[in-house]
Length: 57
Image 1 (tube, rainbow, N blue to C red):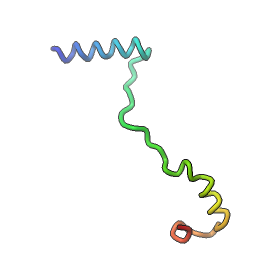
Image 2: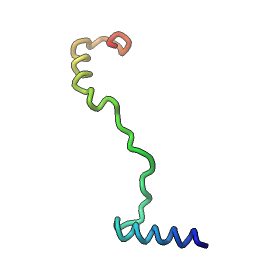
Image 3: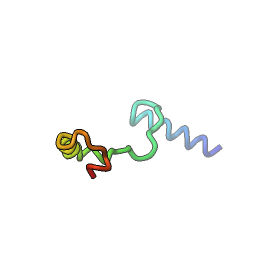
């Protein structure tokens, strides 16, 4: 019975602090490794428009 009380208390606190009872996102956000490389990739494509990934790298 103690577990249910803890859950209810957590939900009440979440309602007070966040204003809703939506489930929280789990895990870390997925970030792209290519985000900062976009200008370099565009330059490579401009220089070699017919190349595939194996030929550019």
